[in-house]
Amino acid sequence: MRFMMIIKGNKQSESGALPDEKLIADMGKYNEEMAKAGVLLDLTGLHPTSKGALVKLSKDKVRVIDGPFSEAKEVIAGYWMIQVKSKEEAIEWAKRIPAPSDVAEGEEGEIEIRQVFELDEFGPSEAVDRARDLENHLGKKN
Image 1: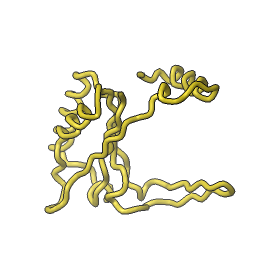
Image 2: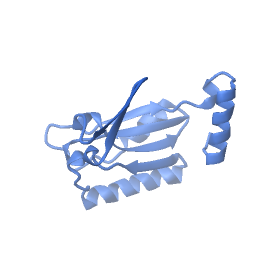
Image 3: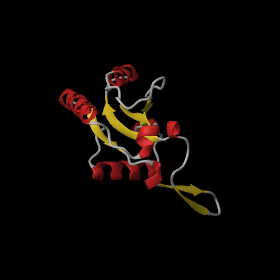
Image 4: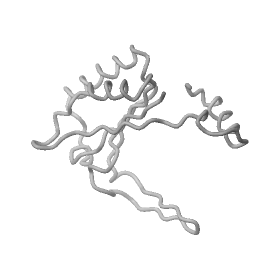
């Protein structure tokens, strides 16, 4: 099962300030542990929404809104994509994420865990076959 562990943004991450050296080192160790355990598929941190854009799609028009957008607690600051045996195992990995030193007094960091759809969950169809071909072309793990 693949899961995305989504780290929610905060005032610090939305300010564009880089994490301190201790957090970078702690995260590096954590990421190495996941890699050694064979569960890590991908990971990255994201620039603040002030450097991004929001594309809104409707049936008859497309709108582009330059960042910043949304409240800091509602945005994604980064993610890990992992492959584990269960949601419980994903939760155990999330509980080990190093706490950021930049979280203000009285605030909490937040990790959202979401299971990724696998193509086998959908019924047979030409569209699913095309998606499977693309997935194989990209070299994705199943």
